[in-house]
Image (tube, rainbow, N blue to C red; front, side, top):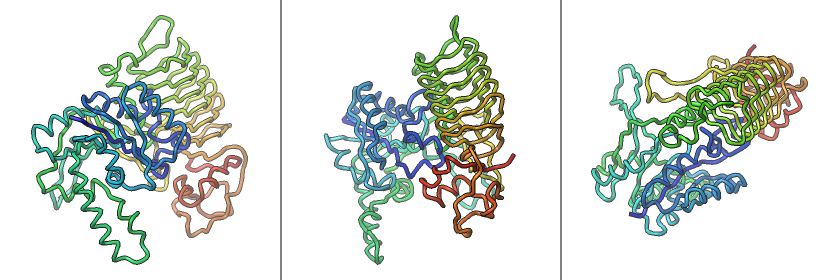
Length: 462
């Protein structure tokens, strides 16, 4: 039967936990296991027999990188792929309702909906077979997976199955979404000074639609035993890369590097782009992804890391649990290391938790992130730190967020009541509180935050 797939990619207002990596490319295009994050979704959809079209849906403005990716993917997978831009963030159900005519065009009998920020085996054909075996023609399927969690003295039933953000719908779903839309319009009509049309269209599948369908007998859960994880933060991207690299041994063995005479030493699953230059004495793996045009010098050790396009790792550097940004440079004998935020290593299906940036007023130890065009000098140590783009460091750092590192400055004056009180000030005596990077994003205009490129602002602790 004719099928379609919709991939929800969000927009620039989302993915704030993915910064500073999402400053350079839209989050769905960030490389995970050597290919853009959303390409894993497209590959899975293209394998489903009868799938006629893939629609990417979000509220990104027209973007050259996105257009280039869609053209290349369409050519590679021999299937029409289009981007539908929402006029605003409409929620997981509002977007597909707004573009329902585009989804139903061509007489699609059913369509998949996939969130772009999930990592999975994508058992789409299995979900389709499950629907045909267990439901009527107007039933809907949610992909679920099992988790273990502890709740002390629960007052209600607590399920061990969570929603994976992957769905199979028939056109009948639009009737249920339309009912929510009509209800929203009626409620907003009673409110004064409200933009009823725009706000009524903001509809969430999980909260607004599924809760109403839960007792109707039309909503089914297909429980998968395969891997699954969210990709909300940079740390979760490294974990997702590990899961995809493990899957490559069966799905894409040609993408995995092998130990060869004259080549680098490979330990575990490693992806190396064909254009990368890696010295034969380097040791890579496990869970390493080397991007396009990367240079890896002699004696370099890389483990549990993603090295992005154009980066250069000089001789005898050590990179562990780190994402090295585009065109960044790490000097000789430098060590760049983070703290993994993995789930239980003894549970192959454990799910990674979303860590907060700060805990108890201190930076939460996590992976180290180097933004675009960062320069790390020789013989320094960068530990558990986040370095924003275009910074040239001159010394070692530990547990810090480095907004810039060129010369001292005084932060622009901001109304003190708007600043958090949990961080003590450093380097800026005119302001009694020290905002976190996320706080700065909320308090200051993005252009003002980026203007710190010529100032010295360091968040965290030595």
